[in-house]
Image 1 (cartoon, rainbow, N blue to C red):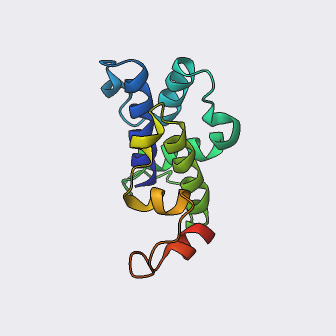
Image 2 (cartoon, rainbow, N blue to C red; image 1 turned 60 degrees about the vertical axis):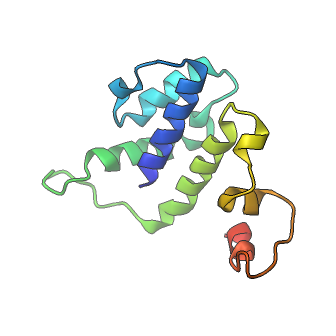
Length: 131
């Protein structure tokens, strides 16, 4: 699921900058999509901080079916924090105006915006911000 989230954000960045671009040709190649997005948006460079995470997501996605004999069983839940950081980086890098990006719904608004909601609205706000 992490690789699919990263893939969708990368495709969104590419299509925003170059509408109609045939992103289907990339399928699940996160490295190629990252390079294309970096060429279209010079300030965007996910490899600077997330190159290893991108490569691992691509590897694990390509080996998602256990019939592959050389599957490296090294995936770990310890990688989730880094994947989350990458997804947030991609979300923040979307070249869209701030209002639609942070509209008043969803976890991003709750975590990223300085407000104190009623506890019944989302009792997990403190956990989301901390973890």
